[in-house]
Image (tube, each protein chain N blue to C red):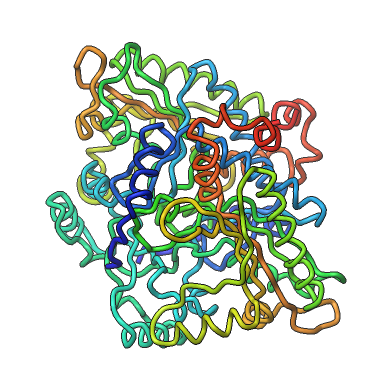
Length: 309
Length: 309
């Protein structure tokens, strides 16, 4: 089982403050929280703000559930790179006797996994994953490619932490671009700058940096170095709590990784390239609460105007 | 593994129509679908309509993630009554060697469950489940009790089916009432009538009926009969596809079940009673598409006005 990463003193204090103000509701599991009205309203406002900023791309809208066919994790290399973060859905297999036994064990809070079997579903680890097979199934992209607005999707990362900004279940607000390499790269870079501007408008003191994913195991360092060297990932970071700044948005160029896996072709019948951007809506909300105070009604007028006008 | 319940001829035809019009996007797993723009916009409009209808209750707003602490399923009897519908979250436990082995098995689409262990999370089976422990932790209810608006929450039911109206992952739009028995009962009954009116305004030919839950195993028939006899559950039904009408909303009186489990007290220090109502947003959307046609732009003006004005 993934061990709890305890919060630092200031992360613990921030979490207590968020809970005391009814912004987050403790569930008993670190990294899983209910959201009070004021928190959820900021999340929804940020979602709208990104929708608005994405209209220039005239995106096609899709919404996907928080679950993904298991087959996609088996196809897209996630289990190689991030086995520690994945969540798999198991379900009961058995008859009356097994059900009675399972319920009895559960009531005693003992291990009741014996009659649970892997289903054909996993938790969605990244909001854009269901979009690639859907696009592959539709045939070649139109000339100029497409942009997809995936809205605010729930994703899962199995990393229990005392840092309120490191949730196990949270909203990724993703926009995805599929097309020729140069179209996709330019789009990714333009959005990185547009997103930094958008977050600065909200009064956040952000920086932009090359970044890498939290790969698992022995090969992790090499994979991360290669990803950085090729500038495949950028993050926007802001100081929230803890020793290091927290990533609140990321901008990822996948080259042909997903397009090759799902046979996504450009109008010219070349293998497409893809990129995605994701805003961490809960992290941005926490950054705003940390920066401007626990009561959104008291935030600077310029920030309130952008979010709630 | 739960067996696929195949669709009837008209359910298959409906599903094909929904997919051909880009309303639902096949994922490869029965009961798991992406939503195209037109479908997602109706879901969002229904969510807003319920929010509006609930304002008379002056509810307190909460939002909860699609996951629930495992402990709650162990506490609230769900695993006794519905072991077949529950989904449990498992995650990897192991080092480099196990990760390599797991990834290799997964790449060959073989069983890779060996190094997966039950976590402290399950999929949320009913949108209101996280609300009861949260209310219990807050201390006695105010005089008159409280109403909670939980928004559109993703829930999970492990019941793969060819019927497009029977999804494994879907939005329950729940409102919850906690208070003295008479307050809670009156609220539930008033909402049952208000909801039928709301759905009739949308041009749906609905009926209201006493109902029971799909209990598992030998005791199922007796539990269902008792639930019906006490009128603990009402459903609003509409003919979509298949031999029987489909439930699109339910109204549930839990008596002291959840309040006793989570120590929820009224202002008079009595054990509270609770009730909830849930609209199945995807089911209502499918019912509307079936009734008024696959293009929401062509729906009757009276319906469009209610949803999109």
